[in-house]
Length: 107
Length: 400
Image (tube, rainbow over all chains, first blue to last red; front, top):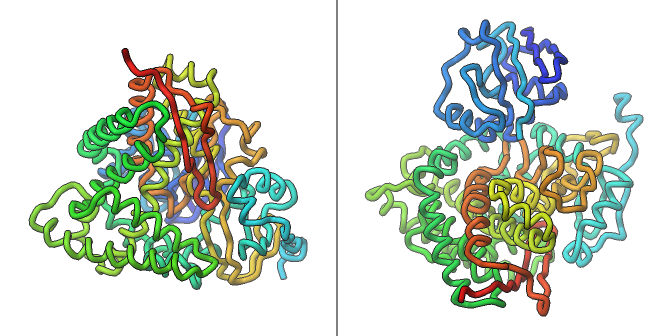
């Protein structure tokens, strides 16, 4: 199992234990974590699973693909150097433990 | 049986629903159904209609239980077996064949300039027709059709061909009455589209451009799949931007206070777009089929149940949207289901937003002073599986 901590903009935290292979977006949608929409089901098509990865967890993540790069320019809350799409980051493959901050809005 | 199944209730029947009433105005019907249960068996439609937001959301995120690959699908007969009626992994192969043609970067680099040319052309046509002209048929329909023609790469067809193909094949997908004339017109278009694809692919191989069909020439995808996906895109990429454009104009002209705020701040046009598709989803219902006995939001459904996922109803669910029947561009932002969700999320969503709220709406209101409804000839909104304006006569002040 891998562990994901979602830090909401109001200070609340949701912590999930998820199976390897589960994307951060899918984990949030399946478990009803507010603040992640994931409209397109993980195709890097909608930019509604935007997260800010806490700096200490950035290094282990895969490079940003062209599709993700394009979508990160379409997020509702401004992109910064910690921005990723939750659908492109998978438990087990990319992290065992991760903490992300959620933007105030995805739409 | 699981505890969930024991506690689940049988699905209620809505025998009072008629196609005629749905076509005229489905929203009071959806409200009554939603208040009673999230799912009904509707004899007139010959489907289980799913009307609550939560139930629609569950269905579109679970392709294992709720398959898109429907048995005896009219859409498969009318258009061939497109990605819209496939589940993953088969769906994903087709979907990837669309590459980046419909994505924001391509829109910015290629399509926006073409949308602008088309808007200029058909706005000129509308102006030439003069005040009293029908905004749908002089502007919105040819604009949407010409945009789609060029995105797809049908350099050997006209926008009028696109409109005819789209409508006749859509009529085929909805031909529950098995009307032979509807099938004849649909099949004629089916064959014309195949011929057009066969003719244009060799040309695009020699003269590649940014279009979908040009991209297909280098994709390892069977011709049958290309043909079916192109027909689905003709059906799903024309009426929808046309109808959201028509509904948005009608809604703004019917709500002068909101219109005044938009005219004072044109950065509100994207909010106009989102609220228009929420309020009247251009595609109001799409099918799914259960792969086993299941319970959906507390209601029992048998294996093989043919569902209608009524996103047009989900988008007015008061559990999610406050005062849902009202058009209000300033409402609290909530994700609507007008583009569908999950793996079948609309591939053309960014194109629709760019062409309608990026170009058409701002230009219409900028170039047609005092644009207003024609009090002598009321606008007509109609439909339920597909809903939009069938007529939108408008007046404006000619510049002196």
